[in-house]
Amino acid sequence: MVTASLHKRKSDLANSKRQLEILSNGIFQSEDLPKFADKIAETSQFPLRSKTLEVLQINVGYMCNQVCEHCHVDAGPDRQEIMTKETMLQCLEVIKKTGAHTLDLTGGAPEMNPHFRWFVDEASKIGIKDFIVRSNLTIIKANKKFADLPEFFKSHNVHVVSSMPHWTQGKTDKQRGTGVFSQSIEALKELNAVGYGMPDSNLRLDLVYNPSGAFLPANQASLEKDFKKALLEDFNIHFHNLFAITNLPISRFLDYLIASDNYEDYMYTLVEAYNPEAVKNVMCTNTLSVSWDGYLYDCDFNQMLQLPVNSKVKHISEYNEYLLKGRPIAISQHCYGCTAGAGSSCQGSVT
Amino acid sequence: MQKTYYDPADLKKFGNISDWNEELGKKFFDYYGKVFEEGALSEREKSLIALAVAHTIQCPYCIDAYTGDGLQRGITKAEMMEALHVAAAIRGGASLVHGVQMMNKVNKLDM
Ligand code: SF4
Ligand code: SF4
Image 1 (cartoon, rainbow over the protein chains, first blue to last red):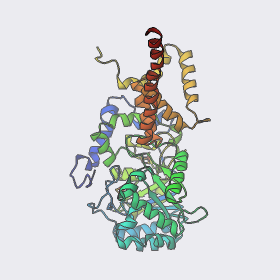
Image 2: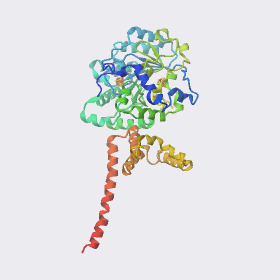
Image 3: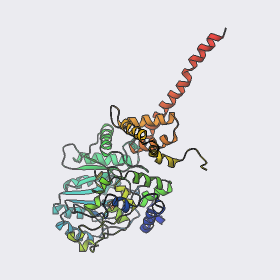
Image 4: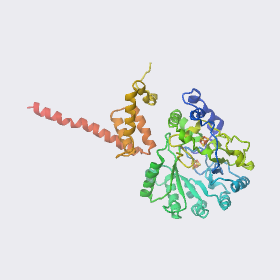
């Protein structure tokens, strides 16, 4: 089991340049597999360009109470990168003037940022249509000071999106009585208790599912059906939608792929499942990602690879939606993760 | 020369069988695709049947393919192993049930 981030372990892969090298060498250099740019050029979709901004995603820090093996952020308790109040103030100015309908806070565990509550308080006053917080569930049970989060979310009408391990792991964890699964179940019960995820409730609770290994997620609709049935029957838990998200071959998931000798097979799987229809709706076309230190990226994955936006505007302090629109997206072979099968984004499938 | 009869990389080339007979290859893959579509049985149930049959015919390509397919569909290890025991039980049973034939023969020949 992983207990420290790649950064803490001083792994080779903590270096984003090294990750980008791996993604361009080997099977892609030898042309056993086509590069992403060439693949999308087949259907005249190169260069990929951003359209009208709809989602502003802000990463408020890489610190997390968990150290998930597949984490593309390389988050963990040992990460010190945390958004300052000053950068948050700059973000608030942008939220006031953006045309985006969705604000999406992520991390790490966003709740671990010491200014998190203040920021949510201020941002919710601006009245953006959909205000998402990505909460990992276990944080609610991690420490007494987080116990009132369900009430806090409710009072700010926050849309909660939570990562959930596969429901079947519950069978084992339920017996053992410990672990991430049972804590997540407890947290979900608490969210349900204040109204989150209930059938007719306006308090939105959606779950995110990532495969727990080197395979693609199944059809989102059928997974949702399975999750709903199991969580209701076994634990009397309700939620609204399930987002099935493909693991992208970067950061800790890339480390896992290489260490388990699955990297090449996984890239073949992604490329074989390539769907040109999904390219039209990849999330970088309508999303902008802001890092803990205020820099702008096409998506959270590019943020972790430190591939900045191709624009004169690089930082939230110089934000200009007009100038950012239509920029060519920075791509590499990790992008195949967004275009496999039904496609994948922070909101799940894209086709 | 290749040192083994089976190469995992060959699974990816399955579609190439159409190169030498396009008509029959196409008919086969159309049929194959149709068989695994959701029908009276779910895609999930069909995947488990395929996994069990794969072990019965001991096809390494099929075992590889339907283990991956099962994981992707969220089929659990417990479900996969139970499906295999169904295959094993039928296989073992098929041997043993012929014991009746053996017994008939012995009873006929033996004084
Ligand atoms: S996947 Fe989410 S919960 Fe897990 S370590 Fe990464 S940020 Fe934390
Ligand atoms: S990884 Fe980012 S840049 Fe690449 S396709 Fe996905 S969203 Fe777009």
